[in-house]
Image 1 (tube, one colour):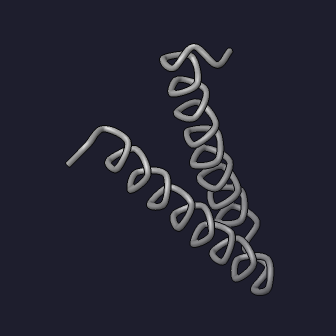
Image 2 (cartoon, helix red, strand yellow; image 1 turned 180 degrees about the horizontal axis):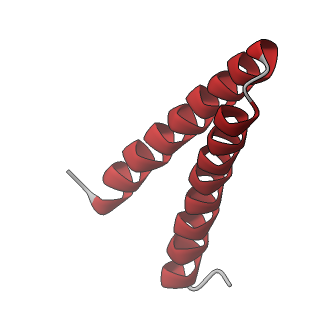
Amino acid sequence: MTDNKLAELIDKRRAVAAQLAGLDLEIAMAVGDREAAQRAMKEMNAQTEARKAARAAVCRARGAH
């Protein structure tokens, strides 16, 4: 497996994890669980930031930025 393919798979996994955390956030808000909503939002944001950081690292490695 190439490094690019592995990076794509990890990115897809993080995207799905962020979506799942978003659903957890909606559920927590629907039932009024503020603490669970905050945890879900933190997880969603962490996954999104991890995706951004990984993409930026790939760009730097390729000399794009």
